[in-house]
Image 1: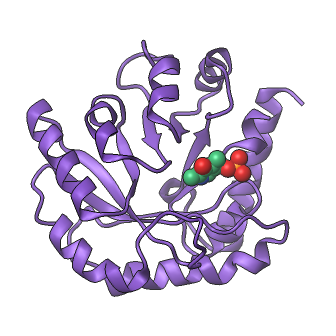
Image 2 (image 1 turned 90 degrees about the vertical axis):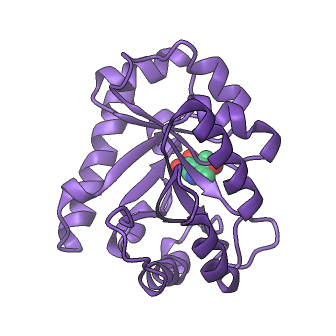
Length: 225
Ligand SMILES: *Cc1c(COP(=O)(O)O)cnc(C)c1O
């Protein structure tokens, strides 16, 4: 299948899932996870109308997105992978939104560089809902206190939560993970208008994630492989 056909199929499945869930398609953003894709594929995806790209490593993203593979400000680059504090400055320079903020020190460091660059950075707090040891993210019990502190940082716009569900062939197995993130999202609502994003769901399970309230799905293999 060509990239165009794959993208069309994902969009169709996404639309069908939104319809089943009685949700408006306009409130769901498809992020094409381009981490395995070469630059020409990213350029082609942009020509096909994709406007959001996700990368999980700062250095790889710097290589592929410098210069940008699309006209400036015409698409958004999402950092979806774990971020080390020593790469925070570079991340602030390159990315338009960071999904993987999972500790206060990292948030403080991002805030400092955003102040330096005069940039207000949209961020999501990553939560380890499933409690798998290998997964990054805050434990749900830590969310309240960390969120309260992160909300005080002037240069970060805290938009919501992100989670990485365990890998599975059967998406029904991870439905409870998505449902739990949605519950945490409501429970910890800070009352700010920016709080509107739930980033969850990948190739194997994005339809279930949409049924459980995802506003961003991060799809890699179904588009780029
Ligand atoms: C790779 C990756 C994805 C996309 O996964 P696919 O199974 O290829 O759709 C989504 N989120 C994160 C954090 C990833 O690292």
